[in-house]
Length: 90
Image (cartoon, rainbow, N blue to C red; front, side):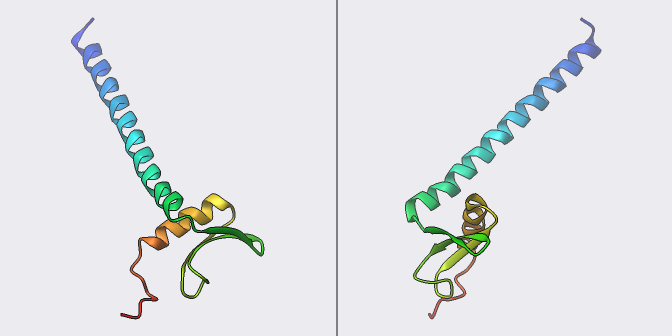
């Protein structure tokens, strides 16, 4: 095999290794975020024609996420959980 082909094959292996590594990292992050949901166990319910994921007694005082599907509302809720608490009275 010529050096040119060896280099191409090496580059392809490296590219696939990096893609596989990135996919594993994304899976780890997703599992970590969904662990938050399964640990805190917010309410998940239909709200009109969308879904709501709510941690707390109500939307005004708690943390909510909305979406067109349950999973979209969960991901929106996770993003909102990362934000500073704007309802804090400290």
